[in-house]
Image (cartoon, rainbow, N blue to C red):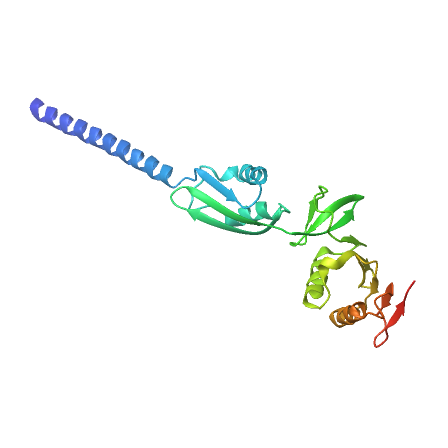
Length: 228
């Protein structure tokens, strides 16, 4: 009887040891699997080295997260806070890397906001001014910068050259004035802006009329030209 009990004890002991070994093995496998799918690298390209590193720092919370479980909306939220970014593409590079390709916004004009100068980006956002783009037009007036982007596109579709503009003025009546680098002032109407720009271009190209300093196109079907 004692021998039988002994056998049972040994069998129970073997069973416990087998369970322990299985648990350890499963834990090691789970830990290894978890380690494989964790994010270990964040790669950012498209901006300056300094700005790329800054974005990596902002996304450091991703490290050690499961690459299959990351919240891309939160990444997009972080990237949208950077005014230098015009476009971005977020990719998972398996097994452990998040890769972000950026396209920098173009500086298209300069404006004043809260008594400080800023660049207006092609993304409609303001970027801190650093005196490096002095040949850009200056935008005056309290304007929604998305409206300025739309206005710029209208200019680019007309015969008129955006590169020839020194400054633009936005009025609360929802219309624009342009001052060219030749000191010509063009007063545009609220509507049919593209047509008005093409008329201004023809006048500017006319040898007789191009000496004038003001072209007023605010009234429909009327052209007022002045040399003062």
